[in-house]
Length: 507
Ligand code: TRP
Ligand code: ZN
Image 1 (cartoon, helix red, strand yellow):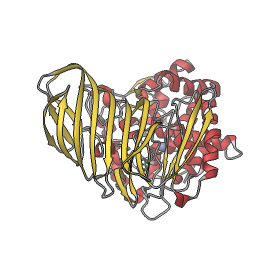
Image 2 (cartoon, rainbow, N blue to C red; image 1 turned 30 degrees about the horizontal axis):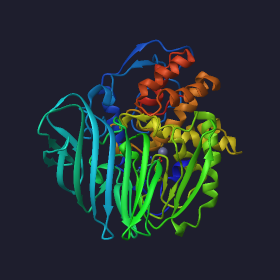
Image 3 (tube, rainbow, N blue to C red; image 1 turned 60 degrees about the vertical axis):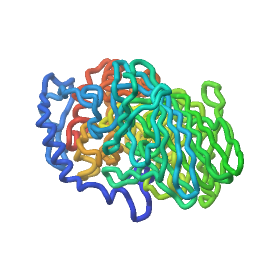
Image 4 (cartoon, helix red, strand yellow; image 1 turned 45 degrees about the vertical axis):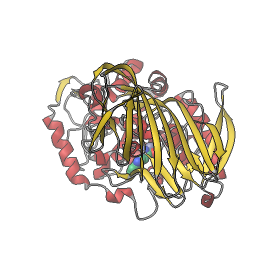
């Protein structure tokens, strides 16, 4: 197994991998769905192109197929249907959130009392505003300053304003109680996780709704201000810039401001006993940004990892372009969730921080956090790129080359998880963090470099970060960009690597 992927899973027995849905069933379902969707071969392949035939679970294809490579797949994802392909109940496209203001009071007993203000815009008249909220007790809701009626079904909060909203509107929700932990389709913990000395919220994919009412889809990004009040002597990590820390009557309020757009799943707070380390970092374009890190004292000072933040950011800037945010840092905690997370500006690690995983989570600041897939089915745009960044870092630091990393992964035979599902056609939310997404996603990029050459490839990566900065986007846009930059027709190539289950022919 690749070092980077292993690094994000707990070393203890509670590996999320072990909890996953059996893959054989999943893969068979995916293969069936491809046929049902009516994929058809429509065009001749580019010269020299090879393709693999869709196949049954785990069957490794080692010889080139003969079918024409270019396929047209029907539009998928949020853009086409308005619903997420893997989490169809999440969020809405009825309005667009501009800003979240979350003011949250945390009591030592583990309960919260909070007010979330959602500023949004509706392009069409809206008689009802649906928000995502899981657990907790709603105390009151107002819209544009007037009391509104509301009801709850499942994880939806339905708000009925006195008057239909159209254009800009503001919803204020007062709520509280003991937040719940969300359990993901793959068995991992997500959302609010209580700890011995506080709580941590890691929200990929849908846990954000366990601590604030939101439009909980990566298709709708917004700026954030999060103010958390805790007993004095407790620290609170968050996203963006720490704009205030003030104590009154034994309670301290930590205020975090994230000006650049952020997806709800990247919003993080971590309440507990932390050592806080502050420094600054000079970026390639001359900006100086604060580096603020929160380290669990039980993990020592993590000095070596913290010293790697600056070189890692500089390395990534060289290849991906300017760092997209105005602060950076890490959070390292003992909490055993079984994964690290690219929480915006301040990635979270559930233990000691190794360099490869640090590079992975920092690479996500470009790919995932700034450039965000609108639909969870496009998560390879996050994980393939972050895994590729690990390969690139290793190559630049005396380790295996990217080509060697690719060859090693390609040599993995009969691996249902790696060669089963197609990375951009997953069909099962339990496969979000599978090897097909991480390793085959990174392999897709290395195969692309092989196909279009390093110069064009470098330009594709930089332009992807630049043109899609702060946006929610999709795989089709990436394919179109790669074709524009390379001047080659690549639909057959991407169809093989991203949309066809089974091991692709050697490029
Ligand atoms: N996105 C995380 C990363 O690669 C990993 C992750 C988040 C994860 N949630 C998970 C992995 C749940 C397994 C299970 O940086
Ligand atoms: Zn990742």
